[in-house]
Image (tube, rainbow over all chains, first blue to last red; front, side, top):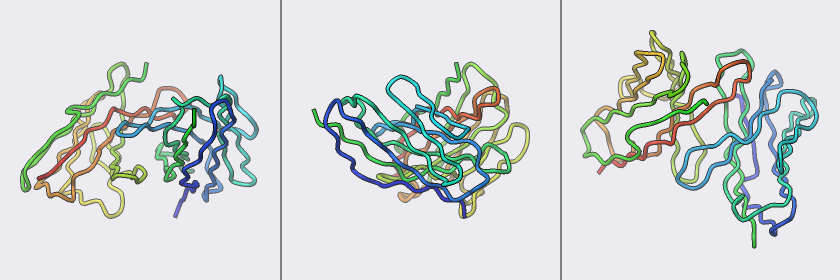
Length: 112
Length: 116
């Protein structure tokens, strides 16, 4: 079974600090990885996608991928209270069909 | 671009009745759409893959006769929950892959279903 694992948290960080969110996946053939942010009662919003090993930066967000370790992470710099949400890691299965498996999410709390 | 809408945003129905939820891609065509269900404090669970012009593909454990999916056009997929029961109360969300090779998925705003 293809699994995506995340620490459920909550992860609490002070405002202005760096929040580090981690994710591991079991399907070694996976090629596409995504981070979504979900506020309570809302649908997920795409934050970052990453397809190759290394870092990808977009504003305050940096996604990191290590396929050898089957590990994906998301760093949020200068965390703001508005960043408080649940962050979902998603992995697209190898074999196509564009299906993704979501982790259970990490709840982030940014303390003012 | 890549906007997905859902209707209704919330619905309350009585046990035993059927409810239809619509998912539309507003500014792009989607030959494939996905339907998810999310219970409180849980992650998204894929229910089925909706394919334009053909039968939907259901995930293991999802009753295809209870959750009817119709993808009649390149911009519209519908999910009908038939003979709804209180345990079907959940947050139903659809998504569609974006254009190009990025494989990013764009989600509708979701539909909150409450069965009384």
